[in-house]
Image 1 (cartoon, rainbow, N blue to C red):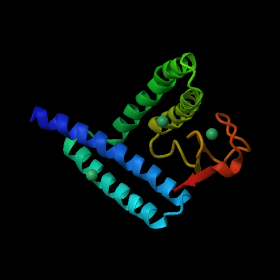
Image 2 (cartoon, protein in one colour):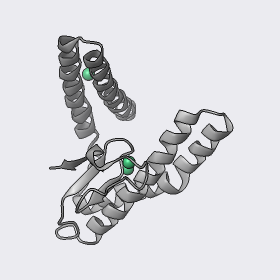
Image 3 (cartoon, rainbow, N blue to C red):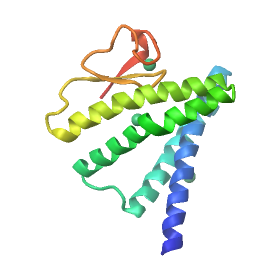
Image 4 (cartoon, helix red, strand yellow):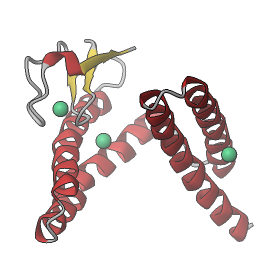
Length: 164
Ligand code: FE2
Ligand code: FE2
Ligand code: FE2
């Protein structure tokens, strides 16, 4: 049983990563002029998501919404306050500029995630009532309307998409 629980965690992590990898492969295939290969990677990405969710369900770790909001808030705050600042500093020391920027952008975006999660956690039914927009460069999330420029990465308004 204990071995199986670890296997489920490993399988969930692996399938989750394969999903994102395949979506990146699909985007590259589109750029390189292989539309059917792109479609195949999108189909396989969707299938790997099915596997990931089946493993996650078997783990039985998804709790109630108030508990999930609390867990998510704690994770976002840890990323904002500790994980990404440390990773960003290491990237700067090691001269990996693209990594440094990705950590800095993620850090700024996680702060916005934390703020919204806190609002939702305080009032899960009515804490958030407006539209939500995501910056597709850095992952900053904003309620209401998209800004002229992203406060985290300075992307212009067309980079924001509304989430259903
Ligand atoms: Fe799979
Ligand atoms: Fe986040
Ligand atoms: Fe952004």
